Image 1 (tube, one colour):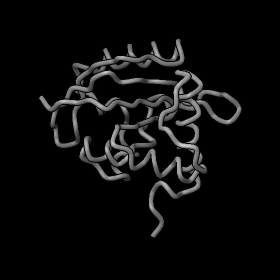
Image 2: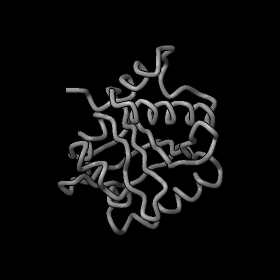
Image 3: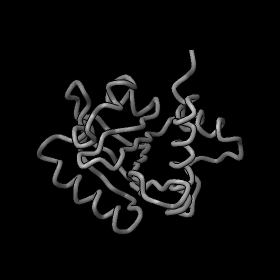
Image 4: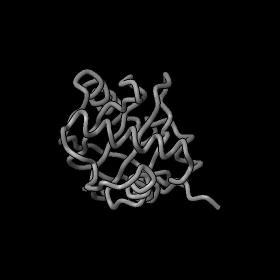
Length: 154
């Protein structure tokens, strides 16, 4: 059976995440000079959280690496059918929307802290998150992504 990250559409999406992060921040998301497949595998197996959603009116999560799936306590199918707003409690959604609008306007934001919730209602605080616009191969916006390495259960 093919691993999730080995699917051609996910290799393409992984490269969009990787290139867009570099475009906005001027820094690499990971240190690697490997082929697209190696970058996709490295992102999927990374110890940091990496998530993204699409451009729907109510954006749906379209990527979560293994660390993200574990943190939100979901499998791939559940994660990628979840509206991204459901990663935050209803009381935190307005702040989340403000953050996403700010990232949309400026291309990216860094040092975001906020409260999120897993599928089993476990609450956690994310710290120093970076949120950026994901660009396709023609530099058109096709979603937003976030990464962070620090979180605490509360």
